[in-house]
Length: 249
Figure 1: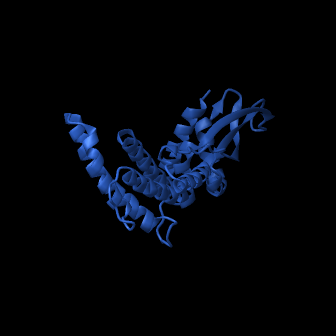
Figure 2: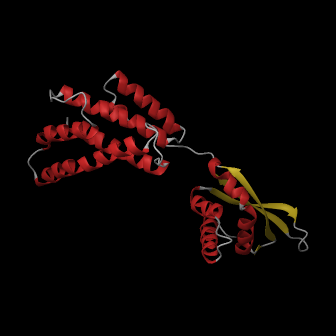
Figure 3: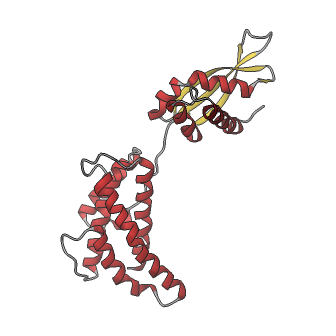
């Protein structure tokens, strides 16, 4: 019998091949199915229901659990998916693949821990908002709150270290003042020099994060918005950077 994971991998490749070779098959909905399948749960259920196709043969059902926001695409393309799946499955013992069931994937979203930067009540409130949004998989909305928390965190660290800054300083300006101040804490070893260079280079990352928030987040009426994947990536960058800063201040 074909194991479920091997079947899923083969199904993805077969759908992709057909979509590339046949434009009428490779609709936008089908490509969404192909791109989503790797994170779907897929399993084949063997039943005792007769196929009425051959004597003493039984039905197998292909179950695909897909994210709720992709359900429309899977339901729209289910017949095409089943056609390809049937050709892969063939006959397994006394079973034929005869049906497909599209279910809802129960998704568990990672809540990235920012408790280490919760230095003020305002930051704590932004982090609480962030955690709620991340638990719902809304990383695009959480990104703005993470930006707010990180901005407040940099201000508080500078204040605690008696480094002067302006109320109007941007995220980039605050970060530049901080990394210049904390570089002395890293030590004189060759690796330390590389870390200092890395901290300086991270100024570009911070500037990009600031631009993403101002130009492509829900904080302003922007036309082109960050997708969840990019927002989660930016959130993780802030997490890694703030963790390192915490370790040396």
